[in-house]
Image (cartoon, rainbow over all chains, first blue to last red; front, side, top):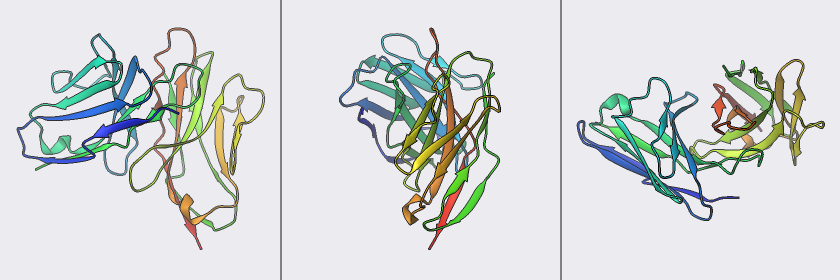
Length: 116
Length: 117
C-alpha cells in the first residue's frame, strides 16, 4: 500500500504563531488528500479535502482562512494553522486517496499540535 | 447525510476469546464502503478490513471478520482469539462509492478495547 509521511510528528508553539504540517505520499501520486482533526478521546473529524492544483474543499464549520491548505504537487499537501490558539491543540492526520473502490485509504502517522 | 454509530464506548475481553465491536450506519447512497481502523495509543490509523456494499460475502482478514448485514445497516467487527496487542481504539468508517463521490471517510466515535490476560 501507499506510504504516507507526516512532519512534524509533534510540535509545540506559542499562541498567535503559525504552524505548518506536511503530508507526503512517498510512493503514490495523490491527486486527493484529506485532512482530519482528532481532539483527545474523540473521533476523527474531516476538516478538508485537498485537491492537487486547485483550492481545497472545506467541511462546514472549518475556517479556511485559519487552516490554509496547499496541495502544490502530487506528493505533498500542507496544512498551515494560522494564528494558533490553545483550542487548536489537537492531533492532525492526513490520508491519501487510492481511488474509489480500491478498498484501503492510507493514513499518515499524525501530527500532534500543542499551542501554549 | 451519512452517519456512523458505535454504541460501545469501551469493552473488555479476555485474552484468546472472540469479541464483537458494533457499528451501525445510516446512508441513502446506492453504493458505499465500510471500513474498520485500529488506533493504538501512538495515534497511527491502522487499516483492518473493508466491505463494499455490493459485496456478497462478508470480508475477512486474518483474525478480523466483518459481519455485514445490509438490511439492518450494521457492520460489526469480529476479532477472534484476542491478543494483548489488540488493546486499542477501534473506529468504524464509511465512504460513498459511486461516480463523483469524494472518497472521504466519515468516522464513528470509536470503541476502546482492552484485552485482559
